[in-house]
Image (cartoon, rainbow, N blue to C red; front, side, top):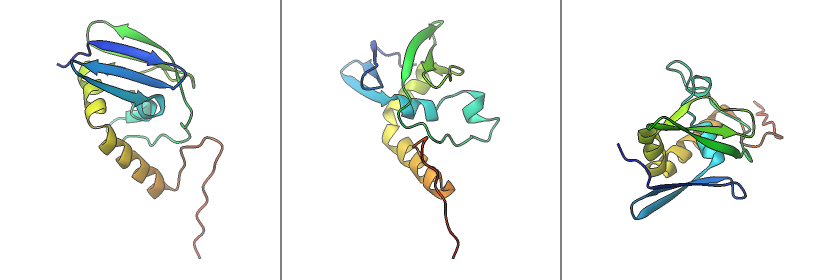
Length: 123
């Protein structure tokens, strides 16, 4: 189980920095929010596409025993524990997971922007 050697919350840039030995990863709060391991996001075997999370931030992070972090987002979401394994997976697969998320948004005709509604016209 890869455990970060350092964890830093950068509120201004809305990122969580995870350091593993010589490698550092910057994960945006939006990325973490839409990939939350909570039942609200993951459903029960059927993930629920998260929309309108552009600009979401992290208010605080809390340790959850010796195996995870609880991330508290400024949109009120604070359920779901990010285990060390899951955080490492998110960090190392960030580009792939983000591209998949953007493709799902596009296919669903949804937006990252909470103030935007996408309408598709069938002509």
